[in-house]
Length: 115
Image (cartoon, rainbow, N blue to C red):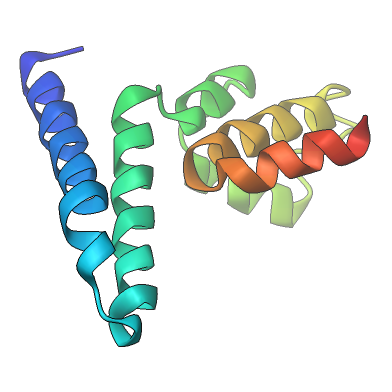
């Protein structure tokens, strides 16, 4: 990880911790929803900085040039389980990696429900 990314990660961590500990508790009830959205956005940014981009792995696993290419190819039927027997698992792994960043609580509940 580059020094710039480490600095960005540290800044987001400090901002989130400060917000949660010092600002959020004193928000009036009319601002709590907006406050929760701010905390959620900072949490997503924090997890994005801490984890590799799941899209990179998806692009690599399907040996294509970009996520945009994958989306277009899927819509046109150029990538399918007929052309890639492991497609469902590859897409599921990508989705779970994205959810671990954008909505980890949902992912945890989903995994608990599967058990």
